[in-house]
Image 1 (cartoon, rainbow, N blue to C red):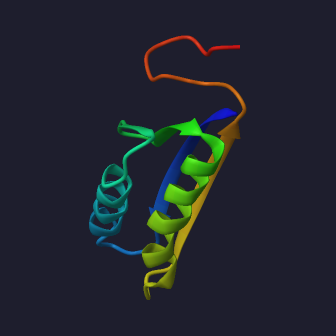
Image 2: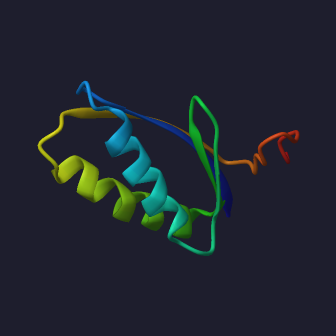
Length: 88
């Protein structure tokens, strides 16, 4: 089953850019999923198990840090390729 995930990270710190950049770099370090970023969110697309495993591994260091943060995640059971219509 293919899924698409749209997520945003909101670190509650004046130096909010560093945790966001580090998180996005961790996402791009994985193969088997498609990762796209824009100014508002990051999108992951791929097989459900692969997407969830990458998300779990990438989120762990952020959540384990001393910086309070919030992840906002939307999970869709359709393939959404940035800039294209959803595959239904």
